[in-house]
Length: 514
Ligand SMILES: *[C@@H]1O[C@H](CO)[C@@H](O)[C@H](O)[C@H]1NC(C)=O
Ligand SMILES: *[C@@H]1O[C@H](CO)[C@@H](O)[C@H](O)[C@H]1NC(C)=O
Ligand SMILES: *[C@@H]1O[C@H](CO)[C@@H](O)[C@H](O)[C@H]1NC(C)=O
Ligand SMILES: *[C@@H]1O[C@H](CO)[C@@H](O)[C@H](O)[C@H]1NC(C)=O
Ligand SMILES: *[C@@H]1O[C@H](CO)[C@@H](O)[C@H](O)[C@H]1NC(C)=O
Ligand SMILES: *[C@@H]1O[C@H](CO)[C@@H](O)[C@H](O)[C@H]1NC(C)=O
Ligand SMILES: *[C@@H]1O[C@H](CO)[C@@H](O)[C@H](O)[C@H]1NC(C)=O
Ligand SMILES: *[C@@H]1O[C@H](CO)[C@@H](O)[C@H](O)[C@H]1NC(C)=O
Ligand SMILES: *[C@@H]1O[C@H](CO)[C@@H](O)[C@H](O)[C@H]1NC(C)=O
Figure (spheres, rainbow, N blue to C red):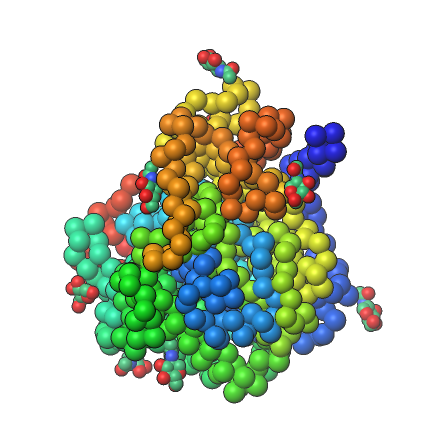
């Protein structure tokens, strides 16, 4: 404890003063001409591939029963991120990727953006695509947006992307690209910047999005740098895949797991096809490709995060710790594993920095530039990671203290090795893939009103040893840090569903209604 407290104090200081430091960095960014980003003056092509609901135990190199030869090879040729965090659900991760800002600073702390809600990633700060475009990149997006679309201003082609093709919401049918309204009627959710796309029924989205991404690559004018954001629908539910991808998994008895495994294989093939297209076009040597999941796998729809605890939507590691790697010809470290703390909000300053863009005009960022650790293996610039504070979560149990953060609210924070969880974290079972060694421990054993957990994640990444009773001083310190973050939060926006969102009123297609 004697050694720990000063360290905590130091990271606490950096946590509470972080915003100001970032602001200073933003202003000075354009003076840093000769930092490690710029050893090569040719700006790299930047390709960001985001998978949906892709679990920690679902990639070959984590020892999965699912085979992912293309992803494994790409990761082996680059840097595997093994202390990498995303948000527990879809909209939050995408919002932080595009803004570099925590949800407590954008109002998206609670749940996702439902397609019936007049809500979106706030317009008061530029997106990563805005910054890439400003830096002279050709900017393209293919796939799932999920950051709001009730007004034109929120649509991807008004947020920095020159072209767009994909789904504005989530959970569409993979073949006919429809998504249900609250009355369960299904409407098309597929469009590009020119309008709805009606003629792709029957085209499995993993193939469709891969082909559209390849079209972008092939049409690209190589004299400009390229920024391509490919946000697959894969491998989110509904569980659908062409039979040929499922065939190799006949030995998997569980229907959900077998279909999901096939979906992963289709995505793996798609990423392989995209990288081949980049090579054929002669772009690969000057490319940085990031592959990331958006959150932990959903165990009820075939995904798996074992041996991590919990799954999608929870504040356990199974919800938060993500699959991710960085690869491509412009990644200097080949075949390495990075165990430094990196978060999805870090991509904004990291990639805009790599593009030699400017961070002027953004609201204060919560992400930090991690290119040094990715490209040279130096220590992470991040010691504190706010997983989230959800002010609209149901109160759970009694507050531990009355003069600091209220532990009845759902929140989680990481400071150095230590992680504190408060409120309702979500089901905390350890669930192995069906048919494999079972180790399901129901969170029903947790005392009913318990609302504080403390783990040393470095020593105990599977969260078996709650230290909250043994280390009350650390709990108190982390609560105080949460309290300081909470004081910087904006109110959460979660507006009621708007009947005018009904696609029946707009030509039977999901789209803006205001
Ligand atoms: C950056 O490095 C180059 C070559 O080493 C040098 O000519 C140039 O003056 C440096 N620029 C700055 C801003 O330090
Ligand atoms: C799309 O497919 C789903 C089943 O996967 C079906 O319920 C729905 O009616 C179909 N919609 C259209 C427009 O074909
Ligand atoms: C759908 O229409 C677009 C625009 O006319 C065209 O480029 C595309 O090839 C068509 N797709 C199919 C499957 O016919
Ligand atoms: C990848 O390319 C092959 C060869 O063109 C094609 O058969 C396959 O459908 C493609 N896969 C995806 C996911 O796009
Ligand atoms: C930021 O910098 C870019 C390029 O240096 C410039 O074009 C843009 O106007 C600046 N934006 C703001 C908000 O200052
Ligand atoms: C917090 O305040 C409530 C109401 O005043 C009181 O009942 C409770 O004992 C206090 N709890 C602590 C931990 O001080
Ligand atoms: C966060 O701050 C707000 C505003 O001061 C306060 O009402 C709320 O109780 C705090 N939340 C927690 C979980 O302590
Ligand atoms: C948590 O999930 C596991 C796996 O589905 C289940 O067996 C268990 O009953 C759940 N616990 C609670 C309290 O819902
Ligand atoms: C957490 O675990 C790491 C790795 O075992 C260890 O170095 C560190 O001292 C631990 N921290 C605390 C506060 O127990």
